[in-house]
Amino acid sequence: MGLGDTQSHRKKVGLALGSGAARGLAHIGVLRVLESKGIPVDMITGSSIGALVGALYAQGRRAEEILEVARDIGAHRLSYLVDVGLPKTGLVKGKKLENKLAQLYDGAEFSDLKLPFKCMATDIDTGKAVIMDKGLVWTAVRASISLPVILAVKKRDGRYLVDGGLVDPVPVDVVRNMGADIVIAVNVMPETRNKSDSEPGIFEVIMQTIYIVGSYVAKDSLKGADVVVEPDVAMIKLSDFHKVDECVSAGEEAADNAVSHIKRFLS
Image 1 (tube, rainbow, N blue to C red):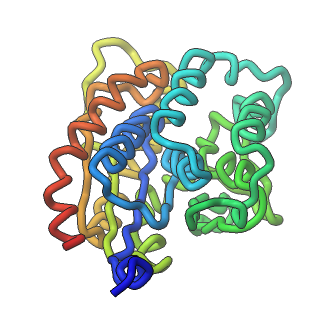
Image 2: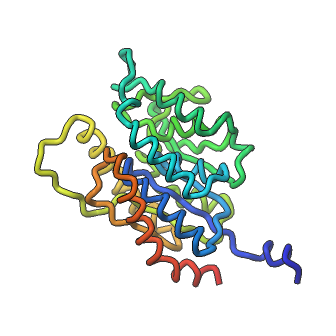
């Protein structure tokens, strides 16, 4: 049997990266471990922050490069929230963020990606999940990360879209339907949440409300995964985008613990 035959008979691995705002930076740590252990990723799906990270990886970026992107975004996070104007559908218009996303994905379309990739959004009119796998990647990611009320909705293909985490926070079924034999789901919505001693601000209240809804939906999604990786990110606030290294470390630790389980499926 030649190498090509071996490759064709290998089980296909699908990765579903979940939503969870800053906690989703742990996805980078998971990718780091998969790379270091030689565990292949053949296709990816993502919601919200999982879409942002997943699209970069599908584009061919290595985990270390995505880590540098995350550090840069974390360092300049407040600048993306300062958008002059009064948007009708969100506190933040999102133009500065859109410019950053357009730069990050460099005009790539889904058909240009090196790995099959799909990401999720929610149709704000119908409440239904929307699977995005065509057109410009950055516009799909922008739709998927559109936290209701905070970030203005994104019109794409004639629909007004908001955060995919509302209806499909960890898109396990989507990556399974793409042809994955083994599905690794990364859930960054821990059941135990850190209790804050201080009164939360409006951003934190909105993000936590979305998180609570999504965490219940995620439980059902995760039942369809073969391996569930759950980084310990309960101490990370949803807005802590500057705590990149802590999140990445949590992702690495959780992925390390799951490696033997994943390899059993592969064999």
